[in-house]
Picture 1 (cartoon, rainbow, N blue to C red):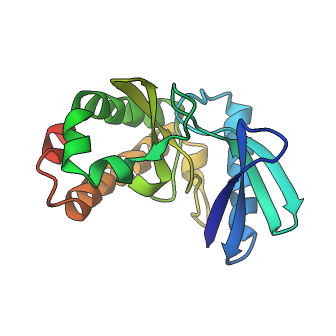
Picture 2: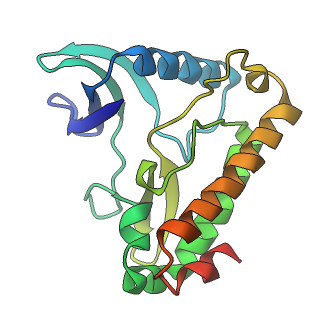
Length: 185
């Protein structure tokens, strides 16, 4: 499934993700998982808040908070920062700190993702030289029997496995970025 993101026409603090390839099953699975997280009362500090599904002239859409930097610009993906050794180097301290905080956040709030991908994580600049990571897509559990949604131990094991794969995928996809290893050590 592939979705495109549009700024909400009535609320510039939100966006609407519209399916352009695939079907709405993913939207409904994700909506159900966000409901579970809301019932658990998690912190939304590093995960965009879901505001429901809406029918648009382009099809069904999912409404989320729009992540903006301190200067009002829309935050850029982690891929954007890792695709440039210069950007990685300039932002190395806040990126390294943000990665560590994201891992701790996922474990503390037991947020399971389908897969962690740099294109689905935004680096929200909270100041010129500081920021945090925010997951904006691929959230939820697609297991046939999603036991880790209800077991703290199993959720943490699953999150740790996915985090290890995430770090490996960053190393593989950004092999030419010599500043990357400093973020992951």
